[in-house]
Image 1 (cartoon, one colour):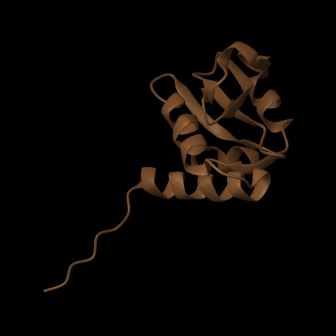
Image 2: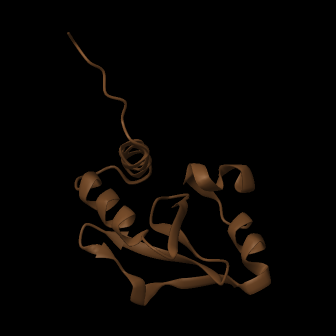
Length: 111
């Protein structure tokens, strides 16, 4: 008897992010880049989306701040992060960004 296994949300997010990175940047290492981006989204940091152009990803830190961070096949370059907004201005900071891809958890807020 054949069985069908539905893909998990993490797998779907990985696939969506890979497609967005490939569309925005092209080139090689798309899977490695996406894995680095998703690895950074753990615990308090939530991945919001991929900025238009694909050069940076946006993270939200539990309502305290939002930042845009460059990434590549080597990893997410936290030391180059740009703070977009803090505290009560986080929503405005997140909505001011032009996104190539938005994580489903943020789509209602941003689209």
